[in-house]
Length: 581
Image (cartoon, rainbow, N blue to C red; front, side, top):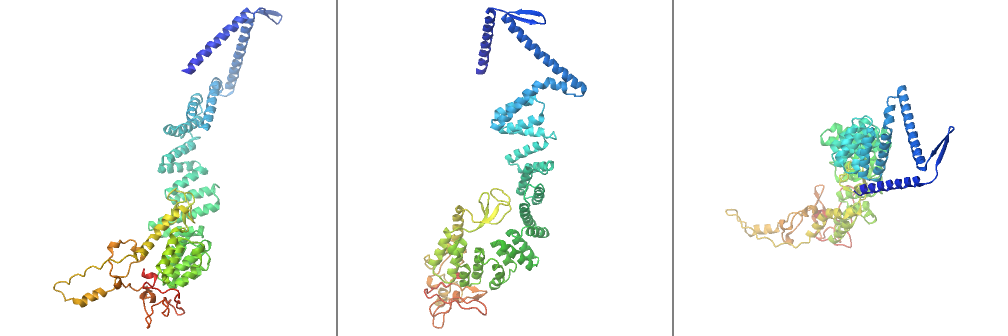
């Protein structure tokens, strides 16, 4: 409304200015004389101005006629569109002006202006390759998704814009979250331009999210051929895809396919721990234990890992703890100073009940690089050597505040995973999990949750015993139990306490307790035989193991085993070993 009023005012002002100027020219004295080809023309000032304007108009008409004659001449020569271009020249000029203004508005993020100018350019220009794309992009910025998709679909009819139309539809489907349709569109775009970097990346990501490992391997090979991915990175990712394919085949009980894929993954990346662990496991199942051990040792040389230790242990599953320690010596010699090597050696010694050996293997790792795992190992060592509960609980309390140690952490979103996976379960990124120390914010909760059963078990050991329940009456008609039977029941030993972790899951009211005087835990066993410390054996003089003058607490199985000397600064009580708890 304001613009219309302004135009009216401008028109009135222009008319008034012309009338005022004409009046001045009419009242001005004098005349204008023009001599041309021997003739003289006399004009008034107003007549001269009018003649000058008519001359300019005639010159413009002559130029137009000359241009038309040139267009007709070109048409006669063979240019069939020369006359059409001549008449549409002004229209095209205005159309290209609108197109340039639409591009500028598009770059500036002005969605409405860009869409208006794009529609104007579409009306003035007969260039659908330009105007459709511009209208689609303007509609996207303006938030009109349906209009944008309509233009992209129209672009599919033209071979020159077909790929761009598929790309636009693919982008819209990704925004909507329709990954199934997006995958089909990405495959179509790949068929149109197999070397397009963006299409290859999008297609690979969608195939990985869909767990289409075979298709992802084909796309990865195309990326390497197109030089959009370094060969070493492509080799690593191919190993990851082969490992994922092997796991999927195992889930489908396709053993032959799983072996082929796992062996291929290990060949492509011998230092890749998860691939080496699975390949070793499948070799061991096939009876080739030597090759399985060779694979684990080679991967251990690059990066020791708990999964590799578990795979090495599974090669001979039915061996004794002592035999397993002897077999592991060859593996642990590869990187003897690595923290993982020390902790694995300590765990093996604990399984063999060689607690001093476990302490020597662990060394100062708990003080130098304290983690929940190393501190828990120290707690187990102290308990196995008969240390007081306060010492054990002290190590467990340190473990609560200690870092959790290395884990599989996503490099993109820092999500901690319990085991390796080809895709991050949080951000869906491919091959972003690495074995590293997680952020500190992730440590406290998981470590406390893992250590809670141990602390609860230690605290339950200090609970006051409930009053003994009354003895049941003898069954009628049965044998007379009498006082002797009652005394036998009173003196019967209590069942051995549950393991510490299991006791954290049992409510205190569900586990009846006998009086403390009658409690006598079952002896722990070593390879089926009761250990000296756990059984509470005494010397002829009455001294218990670990006490001054008594026998040693543990004796290792073997011909050359030496007894562990008792600690002179500590006299243990009734609880003699870590296995009793």
